[in-house]
Image (cartoon, rainbow, N blue to C red):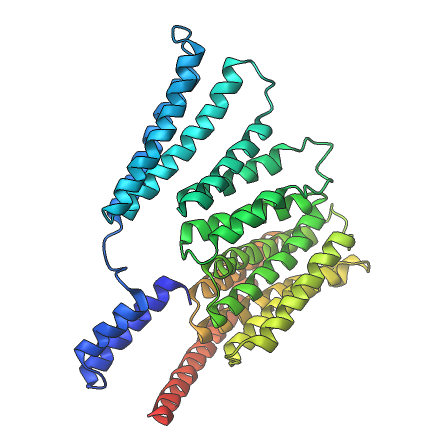
Length: 428
C-alpha cells in the first residue's frame, strides 16, 4: 500500500483494537513506533529549510546572470567555489546537532551553487551555448555529492539534470536515436536512491526514466500511445509486486505513474480509433513489440510471484491484459471492427480496474478507472451521437449501466467486508 494510506488504515485499526480490548494502549504505541519510528514529528522544518535553500540558490543564479563586469572573473569564480566549500562544514555541524533537514538543505544548496558555477564559467569564457553539456556536468556533480554525503536533495537535482541532458541532446532530426549514455548516470543515481524511502526522490527517479522511455517511443504518435500503454502496464505490475513484497519506494512509485499513464493513453486510443482521418492500422514495430513483451512478463511475474493472490489483484491483472490487447486490435483489419472493439475494451478495462482497486484498497486505481470510464463516455458521445434523440437514448442507456455498476460495486464491497470478517474470525 502507499505509505500514507497504509498508515491511516493501521491507525484506524489500532484505535479500534484498543477500544475492543484486543490490545493495550502501550502495545498500540509500540506498534506505531516499530512501524513508523519518529515519523510523527512535523516535516515543516525540512520543507522550510529546502525552500530557503532554493531561494538562496536562486539569488546566486541571479547574481551569475547579472554578469557584473565590475567584478573580476577570478573573484566571481572564487566566490562561487568558496560558497560551495562553506556549505559542507555547515552541513556537518547541523548533522551533529541532529538536524538532518538542515544538513540536507545545505548540501542541496551547494549542489545548486555548483550548477550556477558551471553557468558562470561558460558565461565568463564565452563557451559555446551547449546547455545539455552543462546539464550533464551538473548531473555528475549532483550524483557525486549524493554519494559523498548520503543526502537526498542532490539526487533530485541529478535526476532533473540528466533528464534535461537526455532531452536536450536531440533536435528534430535525432529523435529516432536511442540515448543510451543516459544510463551511465541514471543507474548509479538509482542505486544511491534505493532504500532511502524518500518519496520525492522515488518519484523524481521514475519521472526521469519515464521521460527517457517517452523519447524512445516519441514518433509516430501511434507508437507513443501503443508502446506507452505497454510501459504503463509494466509500471503497474512492478509497482503492485513491490507493494506485495515491500520493495523500496522507487519500485512502489511506479504504480501511480503507471496507473495515470494507462488511463490517459486508453482515452487517446479511443480518440484515435474514432478519428476518421487517421489510419486505423497501427505499426507494431520492434520498440512497441519489446514494450509489449516486457509488460506481458511483468504481468506474469505479478501473477506468479505475488504472495496475496486475491481476486482484486487478479481483476487488476485482467484490466491490464485487456489494455495490452488493444494495440493488437489495431494491427491491420478494417476500420469498423476496431471502432467497435476498442471502446468496448477500454470501458471493460476501466470497470475491471475499478473493481480491482476497490477489492485491494488502492484508491488511485479506483479514481483512474472512474476517470477513464467518464472520459470514454464523453468521447463516444461527442464522436458518435449527433441528434438530441440519440443523445437522450445514449444517456438513458449510460445511466442504467452506471446504476448497475453502482449496485454491483455495493455487492462487491459487501462481499469484501464479509470475507475480511470471516478471515479475522478464523485467525482469532
